[in-house]
Length: 312
Image (cartoon, rainbow, N blue to C red; front, side, top):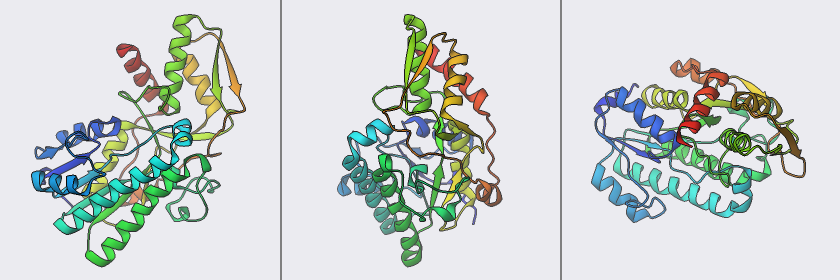
């Protein structure tokens, strides 16, 4: 069943965030004019009454649920309880309200952190339950995975058309460069640019550099979410990725080169690497709704670095 998004009243939670801005831009390009982006100040998604007011005010037919408490390894280690509670509670309130109001499509953005720590590479959606997530971000990953179960059970009992999309690590212009909460690419870009400007002889990077990651350009991810909302109606989760795996050591070398930093890289091996490898099998997304990433890591990094330099 295809959903014609341009005809729908759409709510995007987290629409002012990194991915949310890219998604809203993509929806506008699709001709979606009945698009609402509720803010946390006006609608606290942790409060069931505020969520009920959101539904009364906007009468949504389609919801993209992107709002989340997110951060890198350090942030997850500092506040695991908050990351678990807030991510789970927001989803609980929204999915239950969607069921009661009979919306046509609910798209939940999951996280690659939900996969088991030692998942065979590339990660296949069928492996999602074959072990415990990597410890540093397990509370966040499990909270999101619980929402997958909720959507599947609500589909079975109530017929709610909810889908669960698992994007790999995102990057691109407009990312979060705050060193206390940013993910690896924006953190490295800021670190290298500031070190270059100050003439610092070295930068310190967490871990050993041996872990690998896959990265998806944010506007490619937005396109994948839109296609999933339009064309995907399966209870099974679906990966969104680029198919390009790179070690953190290689990534650091690439960002150092692209930013022009001339100093040394020092690895703080007392800090955790996180999950050993992350790379997704993206065949389900291609077969189900024709999604394939269009932006290479190199091109995306160049755009992202220029974006950071322009704003800083």
